[in-house]
Length: 255
Image 1 (cartoon, rainbow, N blue to C red):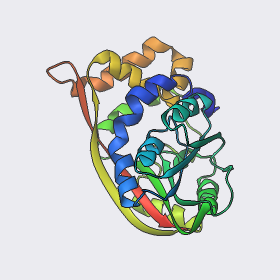
Image 2: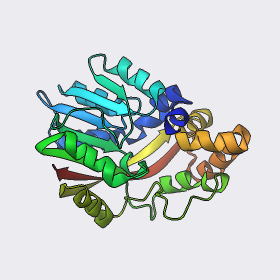
Image 3: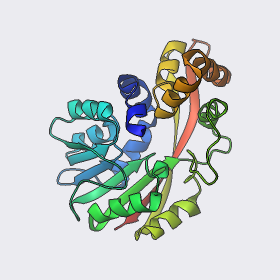
Image 4: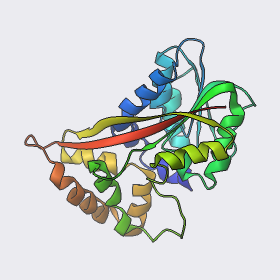
């Protein structure tokens, strides 16, 4: 289901929205010393921006995602990479294959996050690094208002369902890693911003996520755009563009 939804506007995601957290990708790759000789796997790799950055640092790159349309772009970006269609809870690689495994805004959306992270641990080499990147603290974060704009357009989630900020708490991150058999090490915050040159680009970018695709199917494109425009209004700049403060948080754990 998520593969279909996230593949709906794959090019807009790759060209506009995926890079809004590029600073987080780069911070993780630097922190984990990804470079020549590193065997690197991105779980839920999307359109492959993080994989492309890792390949640019000299790493041997692999990735998997549920959305074939996004994987097609990842293969264009990293022709030598090994990209496969798969689910987070059933990783299609052998045990102890990678030095670094990352999941960027991925593990909190798995049906069973502990199982998904256990799979990441399985394919990491002993002593290898597994990284979970998620949203930072939503309190006071401008981008949280944009994310929350779609909530009224969607059915109420079932009790206990994970949301976008499910792992934003440091203690929850560490407990998840421990439950998956990992040893938590560092928790790092990265402060960045989303930037769009105009209204049209902002709507295309924000409308390219799988969550937005689901909302569009329920209420229509006009209602989706209206919700996004209302949320964007406080962040309009004098030149007509938008700048929105955001933050991400990542946990580094050892397999």
